Image (cartoon, rainbow, N blue to C red; front, side, top):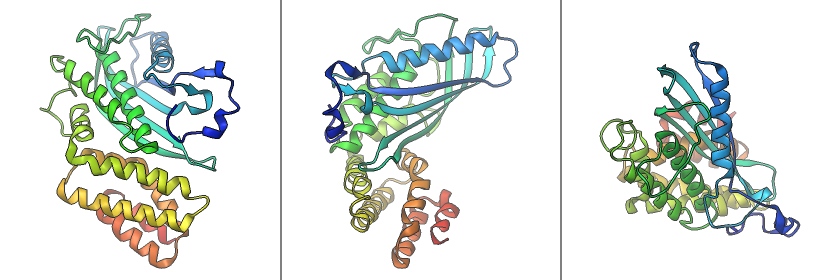
Length: 298
């Protein structure tokens, strides 16, 4: 069982109700694909849900209420010969906040390098040490490890490291694939560079920040809101130093893609001085969402 998570709830969960780690909703959208029977995409959607939700991704025991909530949208934009597909993937996950019903967003990624072959009813199988996995299986296994790694990071200090290492393993065995997203060449925002950031020791402060933001900030927001907000301000300040040393970091951009609305709402009830500090800091860290942060004052 992961540290701290739903410890009291688990006392009431029968041992026989052990569940897999992910509760992942998959949506496959064939965008203007008129030449393929829509049943194929429905079959693909079900196969992907079974793959993500039925596979054991860890050796830990999860109760039903511990499963990580995630949503993955596969938008298919092109098909070739009825078996080769191109599109993009959106990956979102969240984790519960202690003493509340609120779920804090942790992952919010968009991958535009999705190319795969699929034949209806073809099983989606994955062998961690094999280079013969289909690109579809490799992509979804990769994101399963990303979701797990970020979730574990938010509950224990650098708790996600084993899962990031396994995602790195997926990247390594995919180096000879012709499909995009796995190599250092090409787009700056890719599976390769996300994993480089998550496993590079120079980004260790990011993992510490993720833990402190959630465990010392969000999880204490109900009982100690003033202290929790100050903790989050301190974590954002630490993130600012990391960003200065590593401009254009993919994981920092990913953090704000997930957190911008949460941060806007979090500081909306702050004292005026704290609001001003938060707006200045957030606008500097995440200028893309500057207009969103100005709403803190409203």
